[in-house]
Amino acid sequence: MALSICIVLPPYMALLPLLQVIAIFLIIGIIFVPVGLICLQASNRVAEIVHRYDIDCVPNAYRSNKQAYIKDSSISKKCIQKVKVQYHMKAPIYVYYELDNFYQNHRRYIKSRSDKQLRHGLQYTDSSCSPMERSNGLPVVPCGLIAWSLFNDTYDFTRGSMGLMVDRKNISWRSDREHKYGQDVYPFNFQNGSLIGGGKLDPDIPLSNQEDLIVWMRAAALPQFRKLYGVIEEDIQADETITMHITNNYNTYSFGGKKSLVLTTSTWLGGKNDFLGYAYLITGSSSIFLSILFALIHVKIPR
Ligand SMILES: *[C@@H]1O[C@H](CO)[C@@H](O)[C@H](O)[C@H]1NC(C)=O
Image: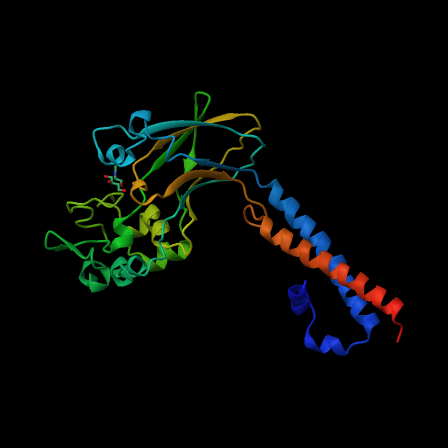
């Protein structure tokens, strides 16, 4: 309560007559409470499916040793998961992968890249990329740990016997594609070392068109993050069952990371977010509470 007084009550208000203070709190409350309700309602309209699959996608025989499974390239990594959609989902439906316990903001990791190289090419391979600057004596493009650890799970979707198209174009920021990644810079000597960190890149496609890489290279600030994989441009009806065809390639087992697949619709609030609504509600209702409190004080102790 003291905190909300601090936020809502600027010092000069202490000089205002009590009745005005009461009125101001009341007005704040009357505005904030409905705004909070509207935000919460908008957030509830966002139909969202979050399906964690990193454990379910490991065959039973390997559950106690998931690393053995993920590192053995002779075992198929294909994995089928079904989810039942509870609410009608209106297109566009955004497909994200969500990682948890993955520290993309680790100091050594986040610096291990060369923005000049991404833009202008091989000649700008420099020590900022260490320890993934060169491989077998040759420069690596794109260099650095972030690129090297590129996420490499893939997803396809079907409903019934029909495919559900995922549009994988324009998932990255346009400004990134146009200004930060070279149209004439091609992957070179990438993922050629003895230790494979993640996804491979088609050496015939310039970096400016490698959208999965561009999305991945925007390092997340928090250990739990989502990255856009694609967009489904068809509605999904309530009670439909969607089959997810996952290739579970990426090794999060070595550091206890979690992987989830997220399908979400978005509203004007931009995704599911209850926090904003609750913040307004709490601020609004404590303002009303304070105005009532002050009103009581005013009645009991008239000036
Ligand atoms: C995917 O990434 C993992 C590392 O997380 C690597 O071991 C594996 O070889 C990669 N697989 C493919 C198909 O790129």
